[in-house]
Each structure stands twice: as structure tokens, then as C-alpha cells.
Length: 298
Image (cartoon, rainbow, N blue to C red; front, side, top):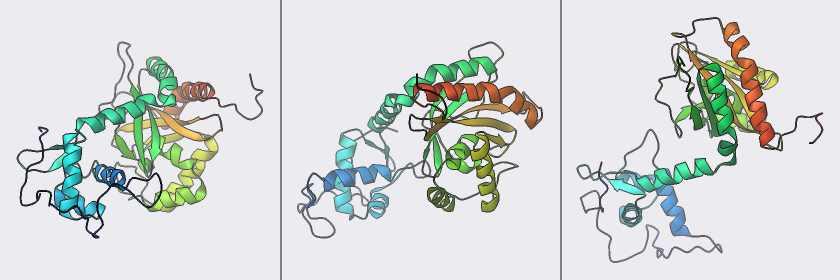
């Protein structure tokens, strides 16, 4: 897909001479609220219209998504494309997110304190167990991977699910997602579950709301979440929470294994992986300033 300046097509009218928007207001980039830029808001709304399920959109699609007419939408899209935040397919004339957005996303992830702190501990856990280790944060009803490590030792067992930093998965059917959901406030949790399509992803996916809520209560009580073929056939993972200085759960870490390389009981997986996993999340949490109740400050 090649980045080009937007061209006029029947779906993409050229900018008209007038600059009024669909409501007849002049597009000045200002708002009645001091310090608030309406133009910036609209540009960000256009970028937010793209998602993993809607990676390519036309002018008409974007206009409907943000509530602007096609001429107004075109002006914003033309600017975003010129700056590299959008790119246009020369054949379909439709748009996708450009390289500048990717750069911003990785810069945001790399600037997070938690990724800088956690990296060495995640790698050590992967090297110790021989399995893939990941860390994720919650974004609405989804998790977003912010780090992923594979062991460098010979004979290690890497997962081949094509996941990477920035990948998103539904929270309800992942071990890290269950950890993060379990530690939400009750009202927030209810809202997130209500917004989730509990579709079957693996042979043991929890698809009943009541059953999921019971499972999350157990995760909150035990401090660990097990995924036993809920995301994909043959995949198991164990996750634990990472806490900040206030004690809030800000991320989760998991170790993933596959039945093709370790076809043992769930209890066997827990026995081998739980202790090093809990130690790792405790070390990361301590570096973030967390002090468990009853522990004196150092």
C-alpha cells in the first residue's frame, strides 16, 4: 500500500470554496471552550475510526463515523494524509492508518514507565521457564500487549499465535484479561462485560455471563488467572497482576504454553509456573513503588 496525496474521486469530492461544516459553522479550529480545538478533536476522531476490524475506510465511511459531511471530512483526511497519519491505496482510493500513527503508538508504549521497568524481569522469566512471556494492559473490553518476550535458551518453546506488541485480544477469554477485569470496580466491570460479545474462541471459552463473573471473583480472590483452551485450542496460560504504588492493578503478566509441548494437567502447569510468575510480578510491582500491606517501607 503506497502513501499518496489524496485524489478526487466520486467518493472523495475536492474541497469546496466555502469552509462551513455540515451545521453551517465556519471551520476555524476554535471552540467556545477556552483552550479547546475543534479541528484537533475532529482529526483525532477520524484517526480513532480505524480499528482492527475496520482497517480501511473511505471518505463516506469516515464522514458517517464522525458525523461530518463528505466535503468537511475530505479536508481533514487530506491534511492527515499529507502529514503521514493516513495513507491512501492508489487503486481503491480508500485510507488506512499511516506510518506516523505507528511511530506514535510505539513511542507511547516505549515511554510507559511500566515497560521500562518490567522488561528485564519478563525476559528473565521467559529464560527461566523456557516459555513465551507477555505483559498487557486493559483498554475497554480488550487487552493490548505492551511487551512480549521469548527465551533465548536452546530448546525453548515459543508460541506461534502471531501476537506482538500492540496486538489486541478480547479480555474475557485471556488469562491477562481475566486478571485485569477481576480487579475493576464492580460498576466498571459490569459495563465492560455488558459491552463484550462472549463468543466462543476455543473449546473451553466461557460464554455465559454468570459463569464469567464467578470466574473473575475467583481470580480476584486467588490473585492468578488460568486460561485453559479458552482463547484457542491447545493453548494454556497463567497470569498474575502488576500493581503500582497505590496498589492498583495496572497490568498483567502471563506465561503461555501449548499442549503440543506440555500435555500435562492444569495442576502441573500451576505447580511449575505459579511461583516464578508471582515472583516476577511482585518484583515489577515493587519497582513501581508498590508495598504490600503489612510490609514496612524501605
